[in-house]
Length: 90
Image (cartoon, rainbow, N blue to C red; front, side):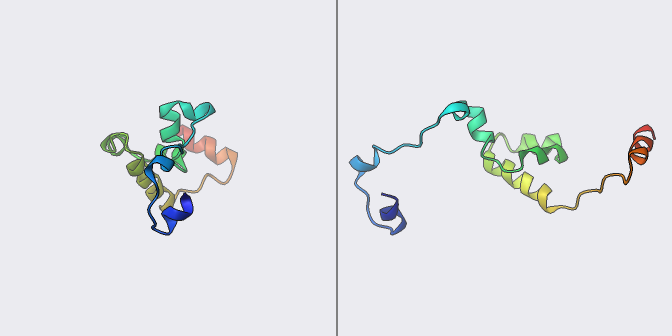
């Protein structure tokens, strides 16, 4: 069936209806299914709340936000533990 689709040939609808993407385990949860497909989701921490709300839960728009963060320059961490503590207290 996939070969026919890739070649642009017609697929018998009765045959195609027998195939489904099976959601198993954690993927049965709709939220996990949707957010689990976004690569680098943890980088949303660098995005403002307003930008996230503007996506209205659209996974494609969320992925675009994540991609923008991934492509941007990120600050380097402090060179030593002492400098980190110093920065946290300032």
